[in-house]
Length: 241
Image 1 (tube, rainbow, N blue to C red):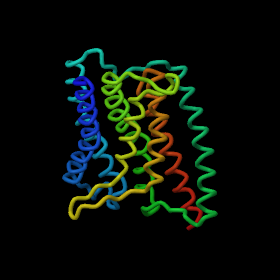
Image 2: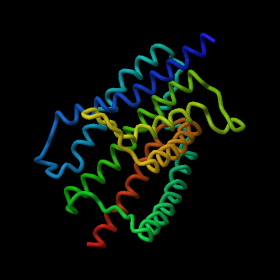
Image 3: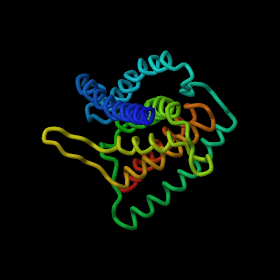
């Protein structure tokens, strides 16, 4: 019973870190404004935020590795053949999903255009963030650190050993990370669809992470999905102008 309580407390600590340290990264990004390169605020803040949140987790990975050397963060190439199969199959599926999704949003009149002015700075800056920073940063902290530590604490798998408990826990935390928390006054801002969507993608990224023994392929999948979704939104916004 004592071991179970200790594991639960550790999981809660990891959840607190995964949700709390990115908030600290937000304060760091807010303290480093840049209106010269990014006058519309389309990419600078979020880029600094994602760099900062990844850097904040680096010392904890070193600490965890010193504490328990057998913790595996999958910071390696892993199974490249399987990894690239995941990437191209996921990319194809996500492209089809995006096309269907846009057809539905048009049919229901719920299309949300790109929220910044369409110019080279905003388009390439925001797409550059999605391609080079969104996947690497978020997969580094959620899959490498999150699943790495929790899988060590709770190695159990479910559904005939197809899904790990660690992957499910981290996917749920990943979904919760898409809830905006504001303190003055206190309020929560979120889209239920966005939270569920993030959990579903988190499970896919986590499955790839575990089966390829590498965090790099989930990073690619994450970035590619963001570029496809954002790129499609930009193209449609331009078309509708």
